[in-house]
Length: 200
Image 1 (cartoon, helix red, strand yellow):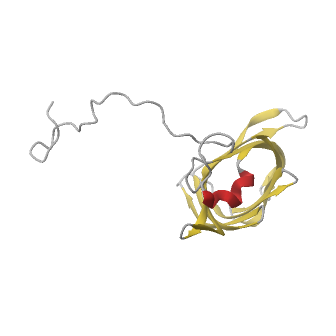
Image 2 (cartoon, rainbow, N blue to C red):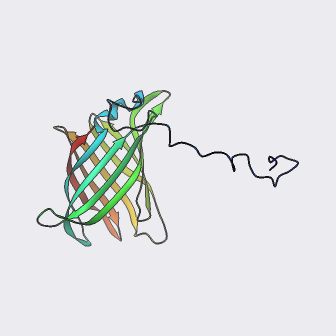
Image 3 (spheres, rainbow, N blue to C red):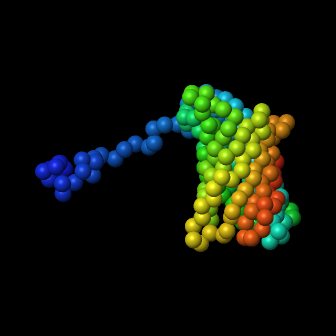
């Protein structure tokens, strides 16, 4: 077939019949000993990089309290942001898994002043339940605090209007507490957990 051109706009684009490509060629790593070099603007967030796993407690004014387990993976690919992925599952009274629970994916981004990272942060987080949150925050030592700047929901998602998250590295563990305003309730405690590093 002839190549697409201004004279022949209906011809297929050159990539249509091109050979297959190999797997994604760039590494992403949660382990600073392998993979790409950490971008220097992420030095202040270095303690968070890894795979973390542990237990927590959840609740909200409209639901009963519950126990959960969670795994968080924080990785990088050499560029000035961190990839954040969380998945949790409900536990019964004997710590046995009951069912999958919340999942999130997103990115943590330091706010730059030229080529230098400030202590300010941005985070973009998305859930499979139709909620997307933009957080702004600040890093102070090994503590990170985020508050929602905007919440976007699909037409079928539950109403979530605001959130607050506090993360910290304490004696080598990742601790966090999350407050949420949703379904007509004001900002209220929702999740808290302690996770230990299992990789990285």
